[in-house]
Length: 256
Image 1 (tube, rainbow, N blue to C red):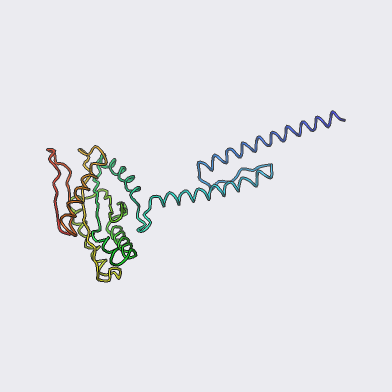
Image 2 (image 1 turned 90 degrees about the horizontal axis):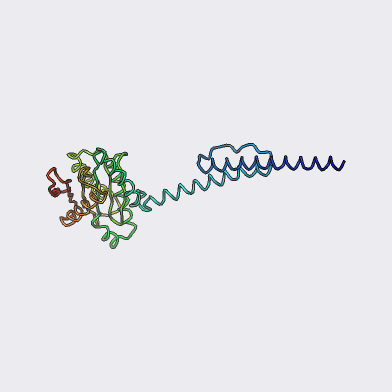
């Protein structure tokens, strides 16, 4: 009798161990699926009640953490005031656009600056300055296609990447942007007729043949923007890539 009980106990113990080992394998596979996503997966059937209750809870926690992670990632790439992508996101997209240009795509880059933003802040207050930033963000979104990319670079600077851009049409398009921004200010209660902001704009193309680094077109944009600011409000400076003979880029200016 004692031998029978001992045998039964050992047999039961081995069965418990096998079930536990099997449950651990289920848990391991389930956790791997959750880690690799998606989260819309059914927990595996389990014989141990505690394990069966634990897996759905793990799934809910993992799903909540994943959502928070996506939210944090989105916020890290978004400007708080304008809700446009921020500088970090811009340079990530710029590197991708640079590679597209090397493969034959026409990539146009635009940088613009609000000239009187600090004066708006000092005279009307930061709420009005922030409203001006949002107004320009709306203008950029209206004047760019869904395939293009608009961003806020810094305090008063914005930028855009235009894909498959037609060189002959771009200066006209950017002057339309300047005019659109001016019209929005006149029609808005934000400025109250006291201060109207102008834009200094700089434009260039990624030169697939001569630009060896993504910093090359950025350097041209910085030079063009400095020239535009020296010329006064609502000026557009276009710096063309080097010509076939390797001559220096030509700066072309036009009133907005």
